[in-house]
Image (cartoon, rainbow, N blue to C red; front, side, top):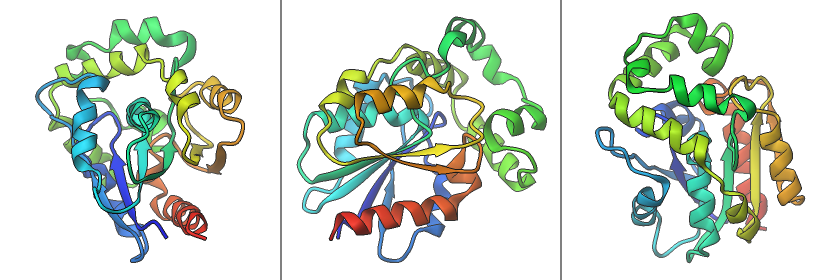
Length: 233
C-alpha cells in the first residue's frame, strides 16, 4: 500500500493550515507538507522544482493538492515522474476557477487588498463556512500575515490565468477530486470541466466550505485513507 502523501498547499503556500488534517490521518499514512516562499512570488512553472525536491525518491507517493496547487500538481503529474501513484485534488480547478468573475477579481486582487483585515463574516462566507471555530479564523489570519501581499496577489492572478486542461488530459495515474458541497469560491464549471476531460476521475463530496481540509479534516482524512488503501489492493 502507498503510505506517503505529499501535500501541496492552497493560496497561503505555507503548509501550516494542514495541521488539523495531518493530525487526523491514520498512523498507516505519513505525510509531507510542502511550503512555498512567502516573500517572493513564483509562477507555477517556477514552483515545479520545489515539488520535485519534496517527493520521495525510493517509494510510491500520492500528491494531495489543495485549491491553488491543483494546476501545479497536474502539470507535475503529466510529466510522468517516477513513483507517483495518484493525485488527489481538494476543491481545485484547471481553468477559470471563478468563471465570469475573473476580470473583476484581477482588478481587486492587488497587494493593497491583501493588506486589509477581512471581517470574520467574509472569511466565513467564502472560506471557512458558517459557525467556523474562532481558533480557525484566527489561525487563517495569522498564516496570511506571514505571506507578502505581493505574493498573494501574484498567486491569485496566476490561478485566474491558468489553463491546466491539457495537463489533466495527459495525467495517467488515478485521480480523485474531493469537492466541498458549500464551496462559494469556485465556479460549478470547475467540476464539470474536470468530468468532461477525465470521465473516470473519482469524486467524493463533503458537506463543507472551500477550506475543506481545515474545516472537515477527519471526514477528508477518512476518504483519502480509504482511497489510498484501495489503491494498494
